[in-house]
Length: 190
Image: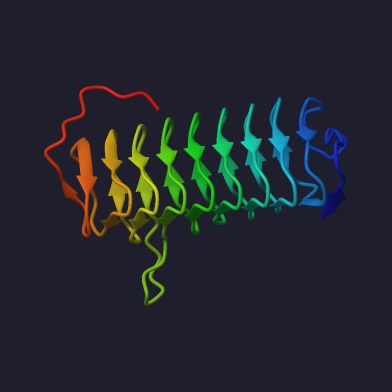
């Protein structure tokens, strides 16, 4: 691991393009990190071995990205976010503060994950069942996705909802457990 200090270009670490910039201080970054162009990493971040960051990734303060996670291009990650090992985040996705994506959760392109959302990959009896968000899906503040749940394309889950089963029909889902509401999606742009 390499500890980098405030305002340093991180192009001197192997696999990191010279245009990447560490704006924060006291970040712990593994030497095997691969970073695309124009990436910014905030204060007190921990990025472990085998992580790949695409171009134009913006990482806020106190973010932890463990081993083998892959983050696509043009992704914005808010403060205090925790990604799981082997997690994959698609292009143009926004992950707001305090969100947790445990284990090898898969997030598609053009997705939005609200503050304090939790996406799980293990059942209470430790059976591995990663959650997945397909392209264009959206989860609001404080949403909880049970292990193995799949959100189909253009599925929107309202704030505070608990998703206990896969949701495949495009629409707005709310409640505990999340159910399709009467609100219709005409067109939205994240």
